[in-house]
Image (cartoon, rainbow, N blue to C red):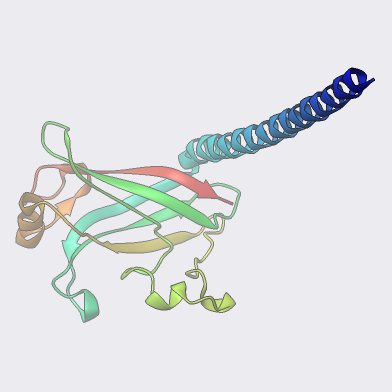
Length: 193
């Protein structure tokens, strides 16, 4: 009788432990599947945004793209890249991320700057980090279909060669400037509508 009680107790404890391990494994597997699905969804969304940006980028036109030295106000003496972009498409753009590549005469990229053309020229205010709803994000003006946006961006960590060329006379797109024979090449990295 004692042996049967011990066997029954061992069987009961073993069954409970096996059940707990089984339940824990099933819960862990379901959590893994959920996390994998979320990761897949976020990767898919990112890929779709990138593909959408590439497809719609054909509708965006850059012109008067140049690197200059600021001449007035708080930008005086600072190195800038400036230009105009036009939304020739049929959708309003709420946010855009652009990369401007500085290429030398051989076509090699020697400097690049990545920025949101809709943000203020001098960057984001420190107040943007305060958790006040109206100040929590920089105000970005949407670019409506057919409209243009004039942008300027301060260049930071610019190589000395490019900085000297800009200060001596400017850098222009497609080698039209005389001071520096390189080119500026815009590329749209992402876009939100």
